[in-house]
Length: 543
Image 1 (spheres, one colour):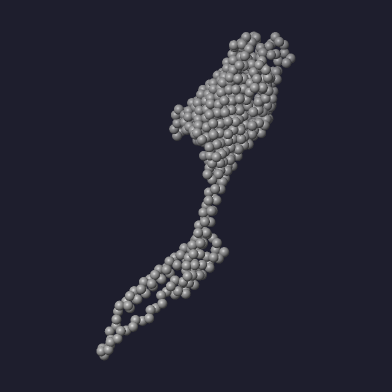
Image 2: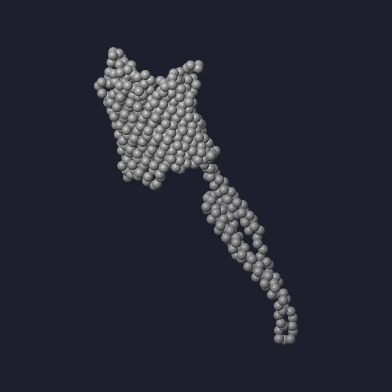
């Protein structure tokens, strides 16, 4: 029996040591089986020891009587049987098994630790992201590409206008944006964003420039401190990401307001509060990175407060107030008497035209101070979304105590036909694109999300403009009044793609102050505006 047990144990140990059985699960099973075998053998040995001890005790006290013949003699006890002593091979095998077990556990721990420390890759929403195992470091590749194709339909009389008034806008295509950048976290408490815009081939944009480049300390959450180049928050429409706007461009009143002291690539430092229902920020800003032609940079303050006045599962009401105050307009050149010019203007909510025409503009104002404030509200009920805002602008002149004042407003609404809604973003105090519940696919998928939208905006840059045919009143400014109707159909095949078809009716009402080329001075101060229509299509990918 002992020989057989030793043989089985040796065979099991040989099988365990074989390189062909290096699989961890197999090794564990064999170790368990051998451990059980050894335990059984040890139990058997202990039983035999007990039995031998009992026999010894019995033999030592018991005497056998003599036979009946009368003779008596003590019967000598039988010679003791040899006690089975465990073979030392068992001890050696147990030691080897213990060594292999420890080695296996060490290998498993090393594998587990290596897996825990390995970075994690993901492609959520199509965005390539790598994150450290402890979540304290991350890097995500960000991109936004928007290609616009548009056609301008202008009246015949527009051909007689001066070049500055847009007699012939250029139809065609334009890469409105082509962003490529990285965003992520550092050491758990810091975040960063580096983004470059390779697009902007239209005349109203600066081709090739830094769109964002900032670092932010998040260790005081929900407060954060950001420094670098970015767009300080200046309203709901301004805070809405370029990829999430309902129409191809932001409405003209908010676009002009955001560019007074904010806008993409603005040098700034800001303190931001981003709670679940309350958003606030205040920023000190200078020039934009792509600005040129100034000596001393502009200096300004930009602030905003926004909050969810009501929030439920299918209904939200967001209120927002914001403003900018430029207390030092940039010097055009060195010297105390250098002009401090600033221009208030906005494109006609479409930037495909490569001449860069802006129908309404204040022209260069030599200003001491410039300001703007705005009030906006956004409401969502299930698939219906509405948004509106009112804006005021002002410029205090350096030459005298007079000032200019302008205004603008807009209202818009959209409805998602497929039932989705826009999610609220506490980080920006604005709303995001609707995400299709069933992405588009001809292979058993859905049709994505479909949205209808309408908007009206009015930007009035006239101040004491007078009437047609008369000279400009003293202290007045004829910047023009721009009214735009926009209708759109948006298709979201999935969370990364978006297609927008947009129609516009643009009505420009502006009195000229300089005779058009080839005209007589007698007909100066006449109408130089026009009414035109546009049709545009945008293709977008964002992640």
